[in-house]
Length: 79
Image (cartoon, rainbow, N blue to C red):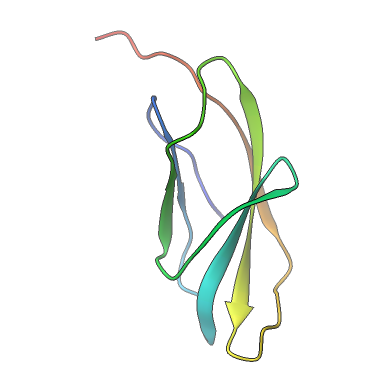
């Protein structure tokens, strides 16, 4: 499943899915982006906001997989 790491952005990681040609990224149920990479960084995430991300793999036929989801809160990290 995806995981989130490190402020200021939320980075989602997902293992490769056999037969997938891309990954559909949703934030709070709304389309955010599509990528062919197995990682994605949400550079529009805001501090002190809570987001729920879903990732669906897309097959060559355009079929979508079931979602893998995570909820993430963006927080400052003290240096």
